[in-house]
Image (cartoon, rainbow, N blue to C red; front, side, top):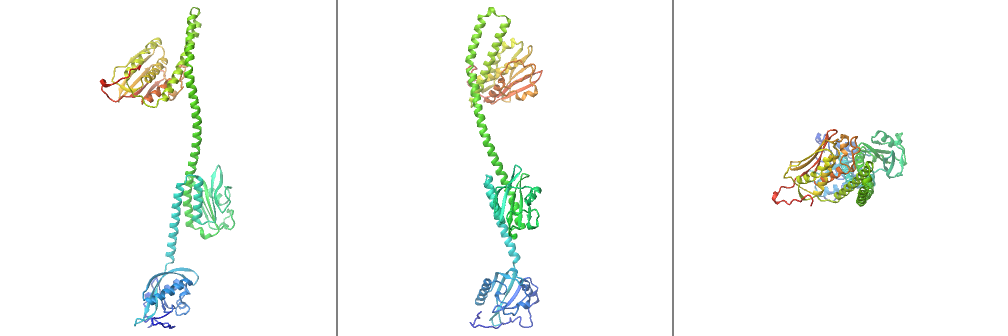
Length: 564
């Protein structure tokens, strides 16, 4: 090294403040940081105890030994850096406050040290050597490295979360999970196996044979499955359960995949380098397994739902086709049999007239049975066609109707039938200002069905009352009877299509099973609600309520008549 005068010297000058009786303050040996002094050639002339602790050498081994220079405690590259730094400090006179270097201890252990370098000058300002402090920052560097590694691992987990959240297919989720596990652990081999139908099958693999079944009772995997707990085996040679599929593996991590309290599979990872699997890595694999299990469960549920949905859609299409075919057949049958029924009815009437003088009571009963059958078939075709008409009409009816008038006109038409049946028939329908929006024909059909049912299911001598009332901006029709009533167990299916309630008292009463279903459909199309109460042996109340039309002066109303 050159001095300021440009001449080379081999002298080892002593600092002026240590030359006399070693007057260096005692505290230098008590501080935590190392303190050193060198001559201009880089050989140590003084070190404190902390330097000895950092390097592992004694003070005698370091001081005044010509060979103990820059390369003594470090590698060649760092030694070159130190020479350059010392030269720069010498040339400029400016101290270096901080410089990190690797330092090799006497036992071969590598440490990281932060040093400072400053010139030592004599009383005349002439450089005589260098001095500075040294701080062992190995622990700090290790902590920083661990923090960087943790940040990287957390960043990787965050990326995995994002990727898993964006995948909807089980195959894609498995691929993301397998790649993440291998990247996270730097494992030499690994696989993800899933349980299905009582078997475990490898679904993704790296470094091992994939797409095969695993024995769920053997190996470390079997143990994890039995107890449902993850395992980190740092030395597989010491574990009697370990089954080595790949030679040379020394450590094994197996983590179960739990979803909704259900074991769905495992992650299995193996390595030839024991340093790659640490406790921290093991914990991160467990975190990854939690995310992977949830994503897999969601993907599998979605896949199952989509498969089931496709099957249901196919089944629905098939059922819809059958339903359309059934509806078409019923409609055609209902429509086409009206003509033949009319012909049969006409000829039956002609026969009755032609044979009137030859018919006895038995013959008359035959004709009456034919009449009842014709009437039943005619009513059935009428109800079927009415239901078809309702299904085709999508929009709500808009005609302004006087509800009390509609009810009164329909109810009046049943007076004769009620009298023939020997019933006390009463129409309690006062003139009310109850206007509704509706279809007069449909409402008339619904009212007619309710009154007809009440007359049929009320025995001779009973009472049937038709009444209306207004409450809470609604108009309500009620048909009350003292008939047989409906058993409570049968009431839920009363308004279903083709539903007929047969009791000992009603078994011989003829009906189609469509009347009340038709009433319900008409009322729903008008935005109304069914009214029903019944008690067996006491009677029933059938009816419905409709919302009143918006208020409007009676003089300005255009009311559609019943028959229009």
